[in-house]
Each structure stands twice: as C-alpha cells, then as structure tokens.
Length: 147
Image (cartoon, rainbow, N blue to C red; front, side, top):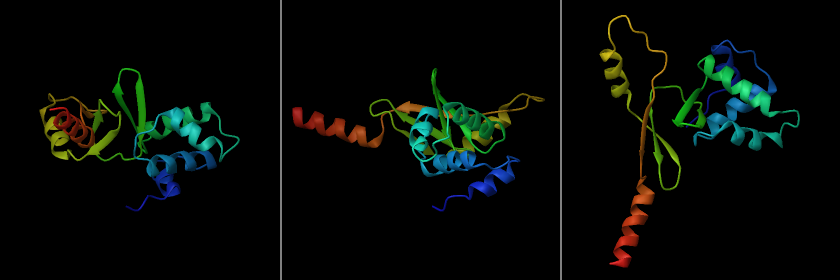
C-alpha cells in the first residue's frame, strides 16, 4: 500500500507543515498498529532531538481536530491514534492486546441513517473486543495438546 504524502495530507486539512508534524503523521501512516502518544514520542525522539512530549500531544490533537487522523478510544484510559480516517472498525484482542482494522462501512452508513431527525454526528467508532485469529489458534492448539 502506498503511503500518502504528509505535506499533501497536511495541506488538504489546512495544517501548516513543520518537520515535527510531517514526522508524526508519517509515523502514524507507517504504523497502523494504532500507537499511543507515548509510542509516537519514543519512536521519533531519537530522530528529532527537539521533539517534546508536548509537541507530540499537541500535534496529535491538531491532526485529529482537523480530520487528518483520528483518536481511537478503545478502553477508558487508552487513547490511540490512527492515520486512516476512512470509516472502519477496530478489533482489540484481549489476549495479545493487538489492534486490527477491519472494513465495516455499511455499519457506519446504517447507523447514520438511524440517527433521529436533526441530529448531527460528530464522531462514530465501531469497536470490538475479542480474541484474534492467532491467539484463538494458539488456544485451540493448547487445548488439543492438553486433551
């Protein structure tokens, strides 16, 4: 998959480009694992010595406010970030903790239609908590081995 040009994405969302903003957006696009702000900071600090945690948090907040990224709130105190802003769902494995994207545009469209008249959606997320295929297969192998 070809990654979008950070300058083009920033310009399309009315965000003035900077070295830090480009790097943060590029990192999000290259790491679809839905990193936390701390993950972003730890990954980029060695490359951009002037980068601060405050800059990372402020940039992520700006990217989300302008629609260039989205904040994914999976559990009460777990904020993660995603450069993919197209409608899609998130699946979090309760065993390994990995987060996967999955297509579900029809669910978003159907939910949009069900809103009461005059209501305006500002944000919509579809989140599933369960056990991923890899962890499920490992559990099945473990059960067979112990049987």
